[in-house]
Image 1 (tube, rainbow, N blue to C red):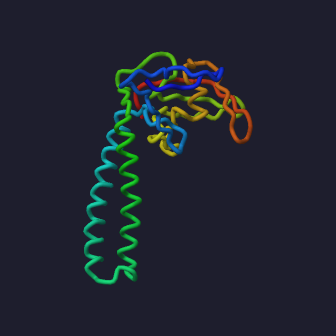
Image 2: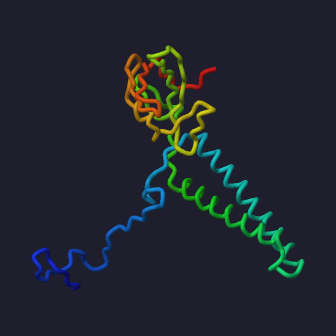
Image 3: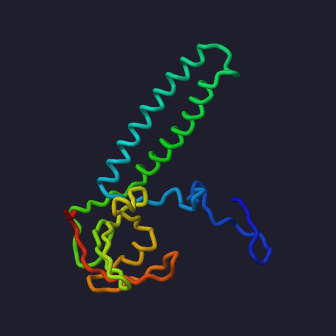
Length: 193
């Protein structure tokens, strides 16, 4: 049995029994753990799958272009060949990223959600306390967020401030211009309009 050193400096038996390994967590460059689940709506999941199909088709097109460019002869001076190889590497990295997200996806069926508290998938209308302006956001997964479409990431400061709030509650959000205060006007679970 392997031996190790105790804190006091003495020798002790290793705490792991034969055949058992501690789980190895792979930390990603963006700070997420490899095993972290990725919450997303059904729509977001389907959009990622469609994007994956497009990227895989692009890889096949690029492979064909690389083959054609390679037939032209001297590869050292073949700009088309090198451009296609570079693009192929970029697209392969994107495919790997999408496949990883799909594998870790936690698809949340928002059709069956409801309630009086703000949660993932809800459409939330807020009123800015200072100027009376109203905005409506839907809380979605990180990869689905698009402020121009009125969707925000569940990990954004705004969404984190809204989670578990009810109609009439105040929401305070630190914004680049300072602290903003909103009131939750409504919470909806179906698309409006």
